[in-house]
Length: 149
Image 1: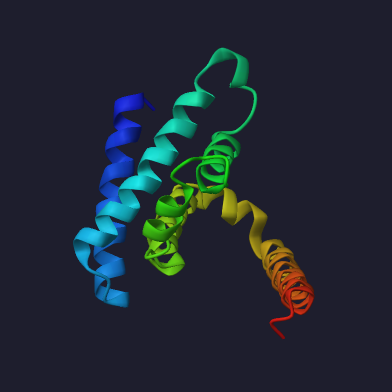
Image 2: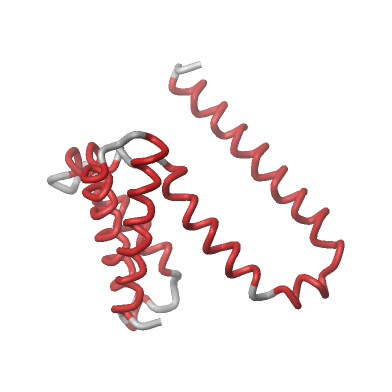
């Protein structure tokens, strides 16, 4: 995918996310756009870093995560502003378009799923259960450690 196409898609999905954030969580649309604009800029920076030949072997999500971690850490001069603005975006508003895209991506590989047949069901259940149990366990330990529960 070309760089400009990727940037266009990021902006388009950000607008959809802002609409979902406004409708579902009653956050002002302009505030949602501002927060998602920051997230899009972080994503574009990570995407562009991944295009350098030295960094091509590592996935884009790593570079986006590094840029996001750096911009929200105390070493970035405007980290308080970035965190305050992006805190207005609900996780579910972000997950909805991503999951829709994942569903479309899976739909194109329907022939592969037909070959896998029923065996995908126990594997999926094991993965989902393990993910839920370990996420709950990590949350429990972290919240107990922080003294919240």
